[in-house]
View 1 (cartoon, rainbow, N blue to C red):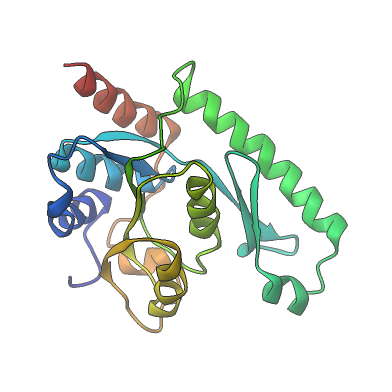
View 2: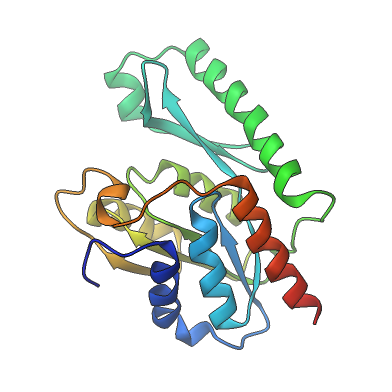
Amino acid sequence: MDVPIKNRKVAGEALAEKLGKYRDRDDVLVLALPRGGVPVAAEIADALDAGLDLMIVRKLGLPAWEELAMGAIASGGVKVLNDDVIRSHNVSEADIEKVAKKEQTELERRDRTYRGDRKAPKIEGRCVILVDDGIATGATMEAAIDALRRQNPEQVVLAVTVAPQETLDRLAGKVDDIACLATPEPFMAIGKWYRDFGQTSDEEVRELLDRAWKREKQ
């Protein structure tokens, strides 16, 4: 697909076409990484007639450079660390724990904000399509995949708009299938490959989830 991509909605529509073989299967569940992954995943879930839910993951940014991930945490107590980044920036164990504690608080807040009292979906034995609006280092997605694997899904499918090829190659051994619209080089940043990469709000996330959950009840 040509880049830059118009927006997350268009990205979701294009990914849904690539994932057509998963349409009308009653074991498929689409999990979005909030916030930016939700508008993408909502289009996929709607096109595939599949359930939509969340995989909440928080990036662990370097203390002196938050944009650079030294790892990530996910629901279920999963922590994934990038040893190369930690070593090259001389990050101490105490600094890692301080950042992890802060992000754990935000992870729990998001879970309450988005899900309310809705129970987490059943993962065991299902085909789970894990969706985000892009991948850079892959630390966040790696934590999400590891958290999923602990719940024994039948299949894990990775669906992302853009990513560096080397990151996809590294993650390929952890998933059963990958759908990606573009692998531009040099990659630089996810937002560079969208024309509209405005921040997704908590309100938009809740609206998209509410719409999907109402559709499931029909």
